[in-house]
Image 1 (cartoon, rainbow, N blue to C red):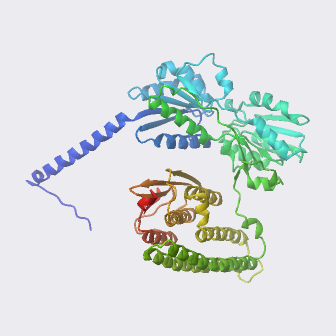
Image 2 (cartoon, rainbow, N blue to C red; image 1 turned 180 degrees about the horizontal axis):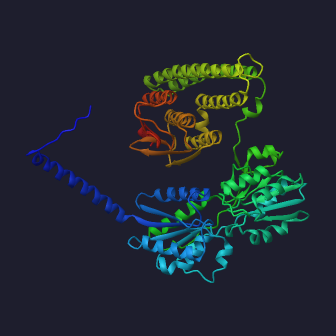
Image 3 (tube, one colour; image 1 turned 120 degrees about the vertical axis):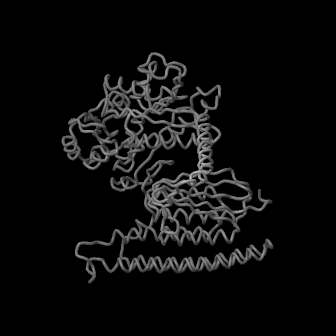
Length: 601
């Protein structure tokens, strides 16, 4: 039980030295912090819209990641938002300029990054009042706005963007050759005024297709018109910020309302609208725009004389939603090479829609085959160990690994079959089935995860895949697969690795990363995972971090604990180290280090 001690008389003398030491420590820490802050460059980012806009979030994340990659040049980032179109006008802009001037009077930025047309117009109007001598970099500003300015000062630079409306329409008409009617949807706010840009861009490619512009309608009127569209129609939208009634929307929300109401397929040239119900389009990536801005600012802050040399404008990339491809009957074989496909389920989703008993039989057959492969692989590794005259420790490790794999396979089969049996008992028509439940969706989801397990085991039994493509590429492929299956984002960073990395080291690190990713995908409730691989202290260091639920020390979830135990076992066999740090509500980090023989470095 906590104790509270009161001290009177001379007690304060004995505590005086402790307080003096504590004060010195706090002062020292404060001085260190101030010194670091003094060395850091100050960057002000001014966004046109509000902080929750998906494009702003993606741009900010990529910008910070790029600038933070150089620890020798720290950058302190401040973000401000003009909140268009909810707020605007001369009086509002004057108020914002006064606010920004007063706020940063004592801490002027070393550079200003402006994002979007509204921020560009604002800074050109009030720069003399705010930051007259500060270099300015612009992103996500259209060529039309830049051409409306007679001449930019030499210290205002950036890469203009061009949303690929024409490329998106061309692709849509290729997939819907019978279409004779193109409907273009825009909103009612100043930021929704895209018709003067879109019309001259797409008119030359329409041919016999008639264009209909739905601009500034109320939401009910817009939805009614979209529901009336026939099979000869295609819809193009950018989303919108306001409808004809003056109601405000996030672009994702308005695009989702358009897609939900439309009786025709909807296309959009914006990557942040993927997943709202649009089929896709030729899009620009806000993450790519953010990385490009970070590279320009890094040259500026490091004093490179050619920092004003701008890179080429980012190219559009075709992205599609697999679910919408299937919904609108588009032949997947007609997807051009290089198309980025989102939300594509594992193959078993399409192949196993029959009875649960059939699915269980298939899984048992695959399990039997994989069990045979386990023993075959163990035999192969024994032969390799003898041929290379490896130590007895490695042979022991193979034996331990075989027992570990067999135990894992047994536990996994038992748990999955029990879950499927319970779900099968709830099928309509069975005695225990609830009146209003249909377990088929959960059964299908379990089959998808069983497929994941089989995929995982196949990699474990066939490390030659890692030998063929390399550890980094194998990790990237695994991260992409898990990201698609679990709807999370995974960032992979890696140092240049030496040639001839020992197979047992590469395979061990791969399996540890795989186990960490499986724990995150199934238990951490995360939407962002960062994985890094680097050579440190004569070994290979793997770090896997998530932004999930986390856990208190000693209270990790049971299934996650099993995964952590398997990772510790692998590290023990490889002679390495494993550290697991977690904070409730902030995520978990797994750090593994495996030694590399000096001959391989």
